[in-house]
Amino acid sequence: FALAIQDELFRETIAEIKDNLSMLRLLLPALYALSAGVGFLASFLFMRGRTREFAVMRLLGVSRPRVTGLVFLEQLVLGALGCLAGAATGVGMQGAGGFSRLFSAALFVLCYLAGALISVGWMTNVSVMALLKADE
Image 1 (tube, rainbow, N blue to C red):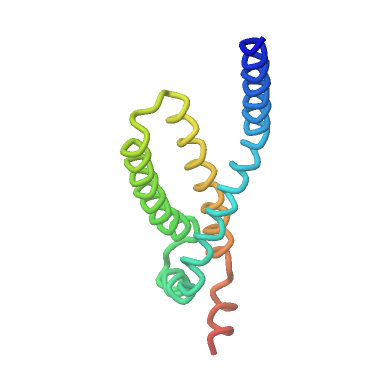
Image 2 (image 1 turned 45 degrees about the vertical axis):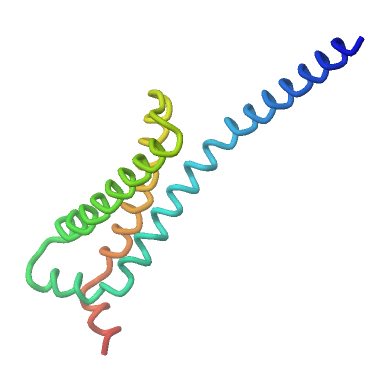
């Protein structure tokens, strides 16, 4: 009888764990969206004081796509370094993961970079004259 009770308890526990895992799989797109939001916010905060620099670059004849590309390259390097540091920490704490962990980490980085690209495009898409007038 005691074995049947423990067996039933085990089955209930396993069922709860499976329910929690299915809920986490449903929340994964929300986490990707959150990663894109963090990328947008981090890039915005990183660049908000550099609008004069963008205006000077535009005045010197650098095209808007070139400015956007240069700033996005900075964000790409920062994102890649953060990804490598996070991956090294994860491997150090939990050991090497499978392909699914690597794929999931790559998706998070891509979502972060998508948010960063939106922020970079928004910040560098300002008129040079408007930037110079605002600074006066």
